[in-house]
Image (cartoon, rainbow, N blue to C red):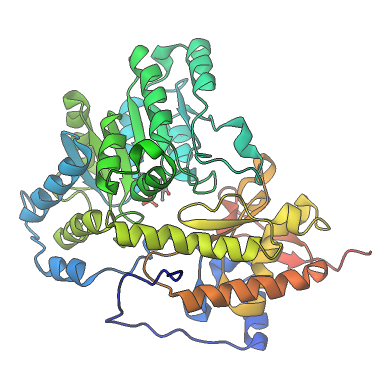
Length: 453
Ligand SMILES: *Cc1c(COP(=O)(O)O)cnc(C)c1O
């Protein structure tokens, strides 16, 4: 049997609204050609992000009714704590309202001006929170990973030799922690191997530096390890995830990713002294340590989601359906970041639209065209988002968990291939208005006239 069916059926539905091409022209114009500024009701298929957009299960909704809304010592917290400790082994489990709140607390407690924090690739909120403390965020991806077309099993790995060098250069006392992001989100959703984590751990342990996982997509990473590391083929996703966490001294986590929750985060550590400092700060900024900025019902949704996400049927479907989108467009000639990652497909727009120079934002141009043509929302990850430090001009198609069916994905494939047919006619953009930072959220654009051929 070839077809991998969605391992769920649908009990509650949300209508999608079609718009006409003329409507979409007007909507684009009103939004200054920035897809972040388009109301969600005007989007047919929304692939902006996989964060907080999951469909919750009947078990999650049922558990939410059980939410204990006590201010202190609510039962929902203890239920979540049991699930997280069983999965991660970490002694201290601190709930937060999002992943970035966990990051903010961790870096406030650990980082000082002049410090350096290495990561395989920092996610943007991680980098911003480190820089906010006056510390420096350094990316240490594999050098080969810069080639979007190269196939590597574990393209998200950290460059261990570069880590060793960095520690020699900066001094271990200036490095308060090392982080590894699984899967490597900004690096294309590519997995990190268990061997790489063990090698990083050997280096950090030798220098007495704690190792933290940015664990947002731990389950997708565990599934890739199961598929690609023969030593792990006989293990369950949960056993692999447990081995990943066992190599770390703590983690940050966004429950909006691999916990199927619409909100929530976690900060975990084995360090008692650190945990005290963290919970003191938590009380100031998030709430009492048994709810941390969330409602009791949110804690329940996360606890159930963390168990559901490790279901092999789900993970097989998840990774296969992302790969399905990637293979179908790549095999028809659309250049993507290879191999397909876990949560998203990235189109390499510098390759697809070579007639649009970087300063004219090729990935923004493709995002606009895909919306104009088919009502699909995607996101530019390139020179609009990162300015001159952008390494690639990518269009990300992130896939919300358990939300879209194969026919939705087939529609996305068809639409991209139709746009690809007339790619020569796609025009670049210039920015007409931009805020001082994080400009991609609110900048406005003007389409440029066709480049003369
Ligand atoms: C989403 C994400 C975060 C931040 O989590 P939020 O819940 O959005 O604050 C941190 N790291 C990675 C890798 C992420 O994908």
